[in-house]
Length: 277
Image 1 (cartoon, rainbow, N blue to C red):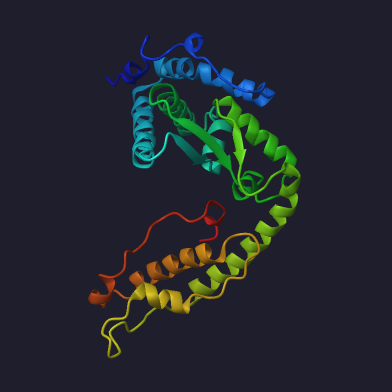
Image 2 (image 1 turned 30 degrees about the vertical axis):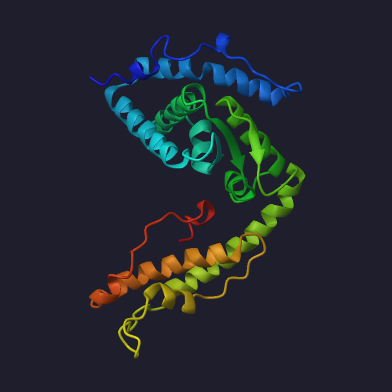
């Protein structure tokens, strides 16, 4: 039998009464709500694990272990962590009680456990960051009112004990304009993806006096031009180059020497582009 509750046993961590907050100003209402939610994290995890079936406990430990591996990888040079929240995390928070999606509830409680370990045991500071692109996706590709979505995200993060830090804009009133720019970029990226998909990427990488051509270099030379107004063109082109290289890998199975120089990349695309690629 799995006993993950041992991680959160009584007396392992300071109680909320022992936690002191030092500040030079009064907290906002959202910050107060985040502090209250932070103090309740451990009990919420314990309550979940006390009644969770064995499979849910297994899924919980796997999700928590994955989060902890990421923490160990990135928390080596600073006591402050900037965590960029994506829409999957937001949906896990908002839909954690849906019976038709039980894994969301498991991941939600694994996230609470992770935050408890990180802030109350490892004593690291977490800054939850949200970008216009994530808010655009949370707004169902910009179709919902931007201020309504922003408030929903702030409330969701406060519920897990985190204050929201915005990146890429200064005031929620800017989001409507930014959503329009992101939407234009999405249309342009879709056009480029369709162009890449419609092409044959069968190539002769062994020609020329210099020997085998580097496939990723070929992908850079032949990548269609992407005209953007919000996202950084270089990063989007880099993503497109990986998509091209992946297609080259699958279409050039007879060129073993060249394939050794390809990684058959499987890395994730930008969240708003997942449905396009």
